[in-house]
Image (cartoon, rainbow, N blue to C red; front, side, top):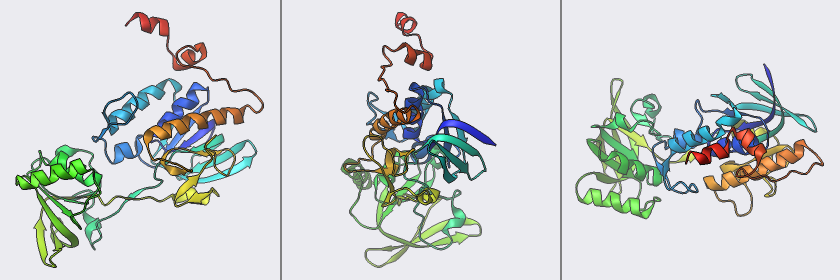
Length: 348
């Protein structure tokens, strides 16, 4: 099957979703491809229930709420999603078109490609002991999709960053017991989170162990315990029902690395006027790109998406002036959004 479209967006995280919106305002049709089975990117995969505080005009929302709101915002533009598949190949057909083929064989002919793939084909860093992979998804977890599954359970949590501490604090009230294991007494998490964790330890509501996991103990097809060597060189056996590991992510560009793009430390180099790569017609927005002064924030990705959309509009209409129109006053924008401001204001 071949699909003709204006733009293919690679990545359905928050920035990829907002890219749909910015393109839609300019009358540009987009198809979205993502390796995950659902839209939302890292927000859904890693912290759907974790609060986010730095989205403009939204004091606080969870990763899931942010995704849901973005999906509602882009609904007027009827984007089409192609999930649970990677982009396997990108090939330039001529000066104005690309061929994009996915791992499931879907073929696109498109005028532009926007890479909004976050950290790329990210993979969680695994528990580094032999045999642990057998229990992944059953008793060993690298993300939390449903906190309720841990209610009343004995938990061991590994890690010393924000994700580990956030889930320690979130799960401690509902778990039967929580033991945090970290390789040192120095943490990379927010100081306030570390202080709350230490206070819970002082109040004997949870435990902290300094050490490294060196092995596992099983009983048939059940994981029963881990061996932990402490700072005192003594190995202890720690029993539990579920093990949650938050060692961070290992970013991999995956097939993107073969597209001939300028790469610097697993990030795609772009300019800051159009957020275009070294290949004209291919753009990169969000955490996947790099440029002087780059900050990996969702709100920065939103800004990049807006400028990339205007650049693509200009590319599709060479020589024509791209007029800036405001959603507050533009009848064209109102038509594309499917709104009637006069009616909506009268209802307030």
